[in-house]
Length: 286
Image 1 (cartoon, helix red, strand yellow):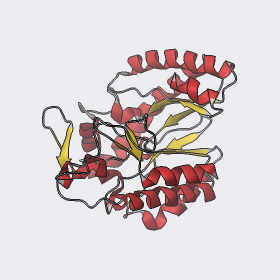
Image 2 (cartoon, one colour):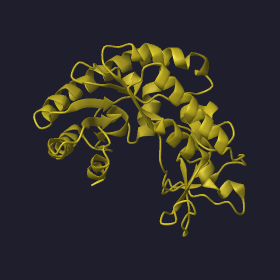
Image 3 (cartoon, rainbow, N blue to C red):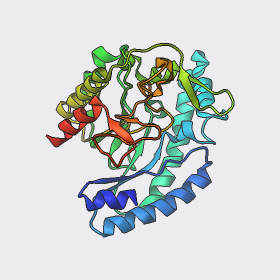
Image 4 (cartoon, rainbow, N blue to C red):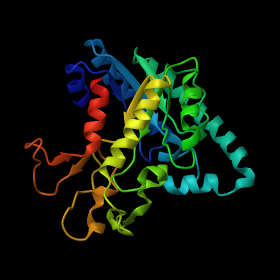
């Protein structure tokens, strides 16, 4: 339904099934179904790119040891002396899976094909039309981030960035992928509860971060870029009371989710745009 609405608006559709905690055979079942749906949409005249999974090795079973994404990453990184070997082994495993997945999808879908990867998966991009990475800038890599994007974009295939963003508290952009470490979670449900300290709201900082990265991506030759993300469920805006309860400060959404009320800018929606919303809309309007 979402893809159909986007197609009616004249947008290019990135049809992206997101398997979570599935084994390879279950993922193939999902892809078969989704590839047929995406092809029906393409045959109706829409421009469609099929995304054959997102960070599959970490988000699913059968590629790395561990019962959760966090456990899998920890185990992969916990032994520095054999990390390189472990990553080579992972590359062999994930590329075998992706070759089979790409062949199966292409039997049912005739449009462009990609996979949303993490760089340590060491994907062989031969079966795909677009090279795709999550790419998040932190303070540690800020001085060489532009050069890295330029290098990636000089490949033979178009480059897409399918995940970049930050939160709306001061200093969030420096943390890169660790931006949510300021959140305390319920030990049983894992649901976000509150922030672990008082963090100053900085919507302008979030907007500047996204604008800077979009400028880099545009000038260095990136084909497509996807802001992470529009709204993050479970991280509502609570402007009154203890600032540690305002989970939206740590949420990466470009809108703030409202609890039990509707917004003013769009009165039929239960959210209100942040400064980042305006920054992104202005950039894409150009």
